[in-house]
Image 1: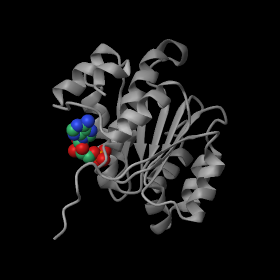
Image 2: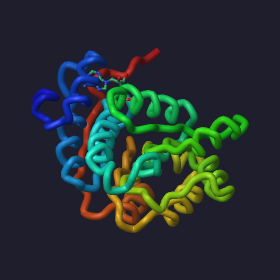
Image 3: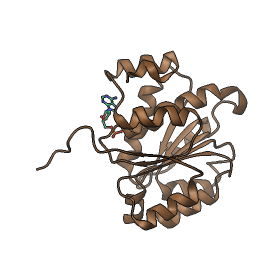
Image 4: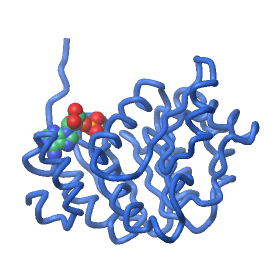
Length: 218
Ligand code: AMP
């Protein structure tokens, strides 16, 4: 399998080649075609598997194709992730794979003043990457509207649970439009996580992978 076989837009393929990626990782090869068809996805995968590109690339493609329907700089995709570090990395990935596209991505997280983040939101964004607490704060203050949302990603669901964010996550999910594509990633799938996945996903495709590079042990 090569990236050329995935039916990607030429401008996305160009960016992927510029990243130096030679071929899709297993999760990318399995997930990208299904996501481009509009399917929901349950991914059992940890960081190091290439899962960020597995969702960022199809989201960029779907939103580029849907641009005329929804209009630009409205939040069409939300990625919820537990930590500031992951949020920043995911935003960097969207900016890298989308560097030849017109889509805008914005990242918001807690622990820092909100001014720069609210200014970015007021300029408008197509893709929002967020940690749960700051997202709820900015929704309550009226800086974030989710009524145009098309694609929702819950990243690292098991860590969300471990970090005590599950209540916030459920509050966010209650605010999403019912008609949407949903993606759910977790490294482990204990019962509580499966129950949460069931409330979010509709007839999901399941993808399970192990890291494509062995994680370093010290
Ligand atoms: P992730 O699991 O999304 O955190 O990705 C782990 C690392 O793999 C990141 O540094 C990516 O840039 C890199 N990566 C993702 N996809 C590929 C690919 N197809 N080929 C080579 N490296 C990749």
